[in-house]
Image (tube, rainbow, N blue to C red):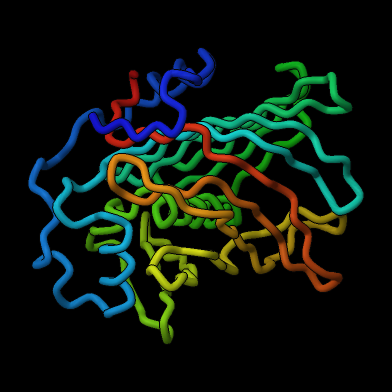
Length: 269
């Protein structure tokens, strides 16, 4: 197990999260302990090599899972009030899978829980107030695509060694990257804008759908990194924001801080 906590010992996942994670039956061990070498980067575009080196991938085993704790604020639309939120997520690389649980406080008092999941090529989103009243429920091809590209974003920003797999394709775009991943017969992609040190400063994709009053609309989606720090000898983002880019302008709907990041932990932890 590799623990890269930014605030050690200050956060534990809620029982609802750990129970669902344990019940998911995800792979529970590292497929190989062999470290990533320079030979593993042979044939990749120079920008990809620069990014992977900058992120501290070389010389370490390939990451097979990540668990993260985030906290910040979230809103449901441009006119919506910002709500406090707390989120836990778990991603795996042997099998492309993602479980994300977010807790919101509506009107500062009413709790709402939302789950975003991706497993076996299927994406799902469900939200419940007070744990019993369904306020959001979505599945189908749009969610399959959106949850898969969100897994890709997680890997790019939090665990880049998860991308060293035949399902990943890299393309150089000047000093930046285009990265795509294929799972269950579906391919999604994102553009990764790199800073002067080779670390991501922004991720952009059009493989997500915004839930608008008139119905779902495919729209550009970005995650912007606030800053980077170094934990256990490799870069870790401190937090970031997520935005939709709509015809009427940018809608920033989430601002989050990364409180804790653990790599290579089993799903029963």
